[in-house]
Length: 351
Image (spheres, helix red, strand yellow):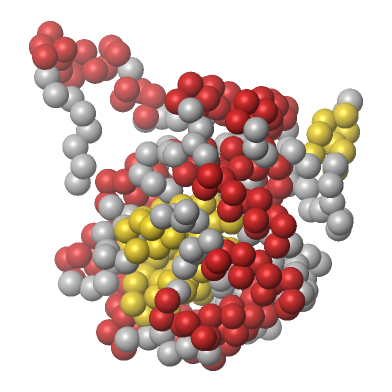
């Protein structure tokens, strides 16, 4: 059965899997029809899912229209989240970005497409490095005060920006980010350097997009001599060279070994590896067919054993780099705490 988790430092109960809807609509080169999108949504709902993720940009707005139609009968049951930042007016220099004009325009457009009068979680989609953080946080505070937005979150931004934004919000008495959305999977664990420690320290709920690394962690790609072969694809895939490398295939081989031991699919193991990480990270699952979503949802039926988790962690581990490895080194720890180190409580303190 689907279980529910508190999202960050709120009382909001969200399902332990989130349904991503970037595939709702056929406006782009990939995606699902209205009928298939409804089947995907129904599979998720029937299994107890209540957490929906979309964005104003997804399939040119069709994703939001479909979601709005699907949730209409029970709007208040669902935790509806959408995003703003990306440009929906390519010929308009203010058609994208984090600034207040785009923020307000995007929200009003999303509310109309979703056929609702409020958004549960409104995400800043991408940090633009142009808009002052004060403008962003005050603008979002005004949306919360208006009742059109209940909570705010942030996606695809540096840890130092998010920390600055939430500290400013706390000092001014404004709404602060309660959630963080990041790419996180067995192939890309770089969020472990700063973003995840920051989220745990500040009490941010974490949702992970790309949990299957664009399909790489389903086993659909195999290395054949110097080439990459697509095992299962109904469309021309955009191959991300950063995801398809020698280590990727070693990770997929490790996943296949664990999947055979657990008698499940490679994708299900990859999803559960995220679900069983410290801090209760919520994977955002997505697909083009209801069968794919059904397979993803079946990850709820088992747990990866500790020794298997250790194996996957070792195969996929990354170098944390400076300053993390330097600060954790034994010589520096001895220099910091002296001869009584072994008798001291040196666990990192949460803010």
